[in-house]
Length: 192
Image (cartoon, rainbow, N blue to C red; front, top):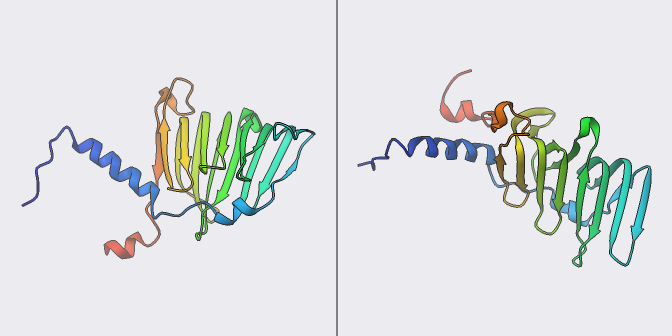
């Protein structure tokens, strides 16, 4: 006998199931990226070795393995454990850009927002202000979410989207598109 689920709870359960569809199998960001050097190009750079901070300004382009970060200004801090933390602001159309390959998959996570905070210790990316995040399978956009703030944990492959008055989505609401996983037709027995 199946348990009865109250009608008021059903929309919450449906939303949880849909969000789990976006999460997919646990696949982390490319692990080797942590061990790669951080390369940058910018109009100017200021290094403060005593504070372990580098401030890059003017058309900044950073690569670290498969990770790409583009912005008008990026502040990079060295952490005691050797990882880096970065705060990126501005860029094309006023938004910074982030992209990173997912471990073991031909997939990338990419996003844009007015501010991007990357924490190399926890491997978490915060997109704030007109935030958009996409999962690409190869070069094709598979999933996309839009909101005022998006937090993506590369380690657990979990994200949270929050709306707000300055959201990129109409009316300040969160919106998204979730595509079926490859092979879903074969698994379900449905013919295309």
